[in-house]
Amino acid sequence: MLRIILQVVGVIVLIPLVTIATLRIDNQDADGPSILFPGGELVSGELYTGHEPDWSFTDDVPTIELQLVDPLSSRTIFVMESDGKVYIPSGYMRSVLGRIWKDWAFQADAGDGLAVARIKGVRYERQLIRVMDGEVMAGVAAKLAQKYSGGETPEAVAAIRKSVADGDTWIFEMAPRDGASL
Amino acid sequence: MKTKNYLMFCAGLSVVLVVSLLYVPSLSDTVEQYMLFFLSTNAR
Image 1 (cartoon, rainbow over the protein chains, first blue to last red):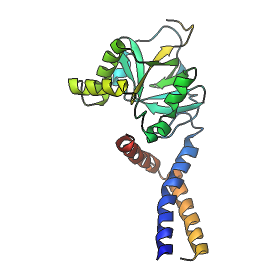
Image 2 (cartoon, one colour):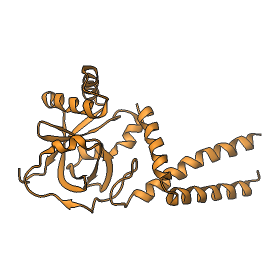
Image 3 (cartoon, each protein chain N blue to C red):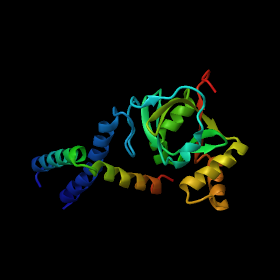
Image 4 (cartoon, chains in turn blue, yellow):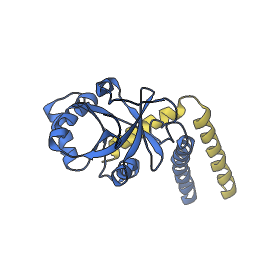
């Protein structure tokens, strides 16, 4: 009886392990991420050069692809425009699963933050800078609530601002790289 | 099930799973959607 139970448990454990390993390996060198698993370098798409674009077009963009330069991997993330600048969030930062799932955010914060974002097929070379400024956060939280939390209600905005203040959600500005044209 | 047969069963199941994920259209996307939902609900 114990043998049967252990064999059943073994199969139950095997299925998710094989699934995760397969999807992870299949995507790791792909041109961009899948829904959940990180991909490789973003190579296709026009590389944007010139003046800082009007980021308001991202209001209609639900997710973008973001690739860190070091370490080289890409993932799908949310995007928000606020006051002419563009931001990305990373949630669940204080949970155990989050620390595994959102490793890119820790790497960006600890490293140089150099990144490439692909939005509607166009690549933008950016630098991720973590933001904690209260005034900036007001607009970012409002846009985050409006796009991804069902509406810009006072409760939703307050919850997001609390999540950022508590460290559960990190916000990065996708700033121009040093020396880039403005 | 004897150990040898069990291991062969697990190996065969793994092969079927890998081939299905790689070659059945939309299966990997569906699986990832469920995993994303699970993480979003439990990564707190």
